Length: 211
Length: 202
Image (cartoon, rainbow over all chains, first blue to last red; front, side, top):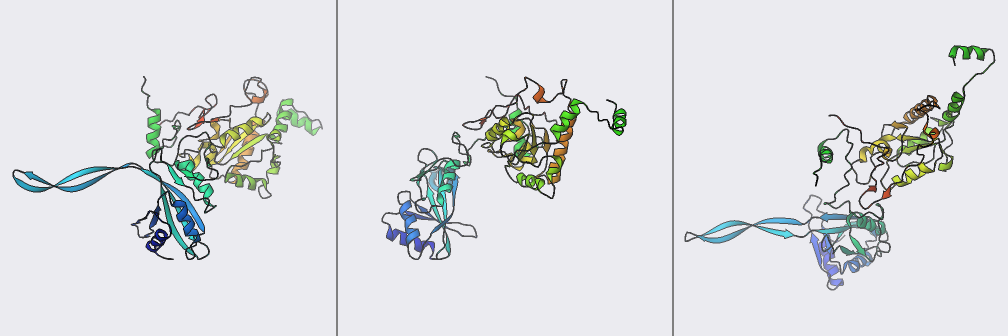
């Protein structure tokens, strides 16, 4: 298989305007992934499946990731004049990074026996802009897994043939795999509570503030 | 009736019994389970019904495919919140007298999955359970033990008085409310008329 950089160059040559970013994986596995913009997601997927020496004909896994809004602290050097002497001072600047949801596709080629290629799609944010293109039309096997991501993370896959909840019931409103999910408080009976469960049982049994 | 007299009469070819004994004898020896399983415990339940453990010895070999013909519900496996209303509905469709065995850690408490947002913490929150079997999953021997416990329980029941079985109490409920799918959880999260959280002393 070609390197990810080579594949990226080829996609950019084949699909005009496609914005691709290689996300580095710092772990020993070094399994870097390819972030694709939502407008060209479907075209890139089709290219990866059809290109003669790529032939990624098998999406083995589709999964979701929730990235919360984060505040990144950066230390920058600022020049300041103190008592007539110019000094370099460290200043901590807080930068807000909006959160987003991700759908990650692991692609293999059955025909050429190579892979995986990790493809990422990102939503705009965790609120209203929670859309990514559905790749079910390219890999039929992605249908249920995209439904599962919709069910548990609340990512809306545009172009999906049958987007509805698959594990939870239709009336359910929450997205249980999101990091800020609050589970129902049914800790009334915990005979062997410890750690996290003990805290939850204690807060359940604590006298509720009236008012 | 005096046991000694009864045995003496039997030696003379006179069989004496009471209606209560006959009634309970009939009830306890033909407990037909409802043929349904929810998870891995069901495999042990199936094994218990096959030749090696032979549930037929207890008159319970006929797993019924319809709740209308079943006497016993073996809740064998994890009850997810999505499945719980169906389990309660099946129980409601069974005719009296009916019994419930909660088989395995999941059915009695949620087991290893009890911290999951999608798992019911014990089926006794919605329907009355006669025998609980711990284990993950319980061995077929444990299920046989539960059967014998249930049979003993039936055998010891008196048909009159305050302790009589539920199906002989005119105003005792035979059906229990089916929980509804709510926006965040099942509604209600348990049947308050049936289940009260036991107090935990530390």
